[in-house]
Image (tube, rainbow, N blue to C red; front, side, top):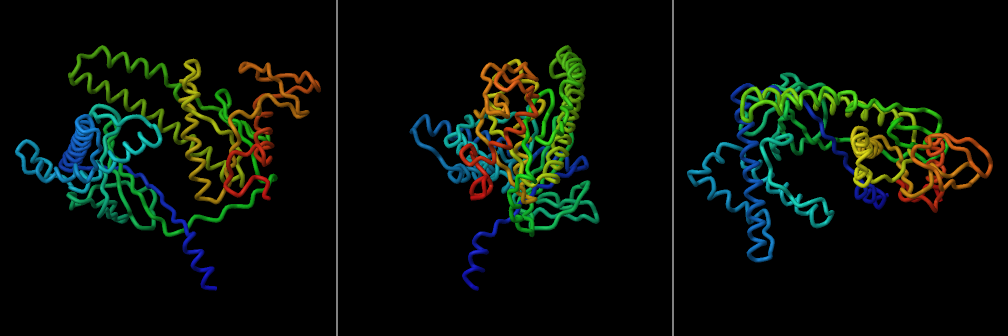
Length: 394
């Protein structure tokens, strides 16, 4: 009936996807991209300085719209007249990003916004309107880039283009990330069935141990490249500052870091896709990667496996394909509780195999933890959050 149709329309959830492609700009386009990046960085730092000064003087905040009103006068000044050469909406987008950074600082305690540097990390700017693509000609058309930028489309997409982000990596490569409003709606969640579920215990020696006995080995991407990274870092430190040889060495170091990051992302994407394809319900521990990184002995190994990135990937892919994610509390004794119910409090991190003092059963730590995670996930009292009403299906 009509009421049902209205209800379905209200609860309709649209799907957004970001597609990232490699850009190959010519010299003039590369120069214009760098101008956009520099101007957006300048406006971001200008807005941050304004916010700090206003608060120090009057103990009040200033919105991005107030700062945006200064852009007209800045473009008329001789010292900053070069702001006219770039897309004005990109400048306004950098102020919007500054507001988002302040919101995260006050609401989520993510850290006070910092001034941007042209020497650190990826450099980027946003285009909020009028991004067009031509898959046949392999071109991306942006404001101020009338002839289009050559682009490698390894896959196509259908849907409405919302925003795009053009970035330059430290290794000198250019990319565009296009946010698309996909025509398809999010699929309905699959029914939670214990037979189609799996418990996963994440670790360092073995990246993931599944409750059905499958082990996914840790590729140790950073550790395998550590010697080469150290050697390249030494070469950088020996070069004279601001020299051409130093710039070349810095680029070689950035290329090697990029290779490590690409291998890690490839491994995480393949692993999460394997889990999504083979299991309808995935049970995990609620882990705080920030707190875990405070252990200086394990920090490097933990950063190499990128637990936070893994959780982000598994979450959004579960939304795309209708899988369920169930997380248990971080303080559940998943590694310490034997099948008989006895909890072995004296278990150490170095103990990979332990014998239960109550029943005499020999337990493998990681496999036991994976099975207990699945068991706790389907117990209503121990479930932290599920994608359905509760894990037990009541």
